[in-house]
Image: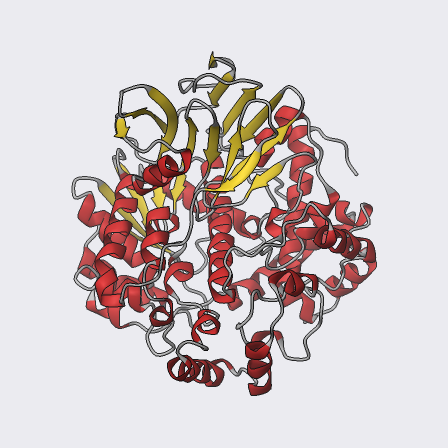
Length: 600
């Protein structure tokens, strides 16, 4: 199947004085417009639902993940913020509402669904894909955004950086508000809930939220592909899917093992208990390695993403799903981000509950090799969030994998071949008056957790974009706002437990999951796959970067990069910097290839 962009992208054009929300349209050539607001679906794939107020007057538009027939929702809440919150509780993900005075548009609080906008004197144009919007308004790629894409991880506020000139991302949890005669404004519609429930009291809410999300993701499909890696996350999604859709052909997919990876053993145990309609077990060589087909350029994602390093794997899985007759793919992406319980949260509780918090911090110290002096330094640090971000390039004497995570954010890593010009672009972004250096929470731990969740959702979003481009919709039920809210309702300190693996999820699924899955305390990692991917695809990697567009733009130093590529066992080749460089270069070339934009 030919690679292409997800054709379901949303595009809204809002003129000076909108009067009503238009009905959903099938493509750009057939748009319905009323009172100046045009709503365009490039293809059917999400289902629109009219939202009416207590008097029955139509007042908005909502996009729901469910494929069930559109139904009317009545609400007595009048404010746009209240309506957005109510619709999120019902599963609405991308929503535009007209209240009579204001058009408000938002994506999801997790960041799995995002909103971008561009404005001029005549209108504001909004899309849930940055590239769709950029092509529509003729925006050019911003070099600062390319430099930022080399950072690992691209955390807040770097994820709000300008990838396209004039294209503004709306931060998850915020909504775009448009009123006649005033510039567009971005305001909050979602706030984290009060964390008050014990794990046992909140387990029912977590389970209900995951069930509702899986139900919406799988509704209307005759055949479903679901990951069954043997881990807690994918097994949860598969178990719930089988329970919710007993008459649907359910295909469980287990990827092959390399080296000492033991996931397949756990997956076989889970499959014997769950008994899916079909269980596909792949061998270790049945899926492409990381970086395979590096020269096969594409522009499936609307931003440079590490997901592009596994594009061939995603494409192969999509083909397996299509062959099995599946029309959607349910994954366990997001389980780590929601339920692991970040140690950073202990920073928020250490002064209120010192004994319990310090006991857990000490446990992490011994488990992860954190130096005691660095723990003390971070706990006593009084840097504001803005000061912490401005200090992003400070080099720590502590090994990266030994740095405690008890501060606002994990210091980002820049590849050693980023040029002085590339560093300057990033530094200028940090100090720019247009860069919002406000944290997402007043508490460092709560901010860091939200940041990590949204990074994970952005990665899953990119994987979804690649999968759809190759013929199979992909859903990540854990990155549903209902799951986010239910999880954050749990007492934060209780969710952080160095002696219990993902306790909130296990409690929620205790009578659904196989006993073996509930007792598992480990998770396999993919360092061997990365090493083999570099080794087997080194020639293609060199060819991709031989005449690098990033180097031509002055963002990376080609000599330093080529030296690293020619050096066996160079430490930088096993670091995330190689992944971000390859993916940004591949994405940039793909944009040039598919859009015909000028080469740098």
